[in-house]
Structures are given as C-alpha cells and as structure tokens.
Image (cartoon, rainbow, N blue to C red):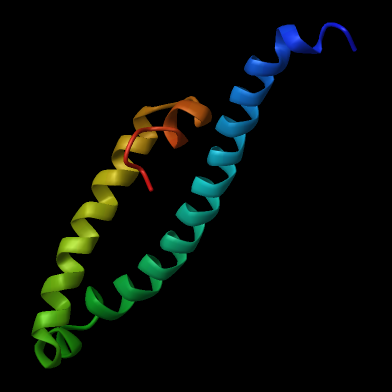
Length: 89
C-alpha cells in the first residue's frame, strides 16, 4: 500500500512494545511459579531455614526484591507501560 510508509515506524514501535510485553509476562509467570514453590519451602519450614541458613538468607533477599517488583507492577495499570520499563529484563 502507498500509505504504509506513513505508519511503518509507529506500527514497528507497537510491535516491539507488544512483543516485549509478551516476553515480560511470560517471564513474570515463570518467576512467580518458582518463587511460590521456594516460598513454601523457605518461609513455611523453620527446619529447612536452620539446615540451609545461607540459602534461606539469599531467598529472603529474593523474596523482598520480588515483592517490591510486584508492588511496582500493581501500581501501573497499563500493561504496555508496566512491561516496557527500563532495566526490567
């Protein structure tokens, strides 16, 4: 079409943003599944925390970071804005 040149840049930008959104959401889902599994192990069992103190401490840091990320994501109601933030992945 003779009009494609006019819209090509904008369409390319939207394709990139939506592709990034799709990738980030897929990563979020995988991280959430893994985090949920690890949370039940490290937060739910004092015995494991005693047996694996270094791993427990490392998970505590990851847990804090993950909850902070989720909190930030919840504040942004636009999925494209939320998933296209700098340094996200």
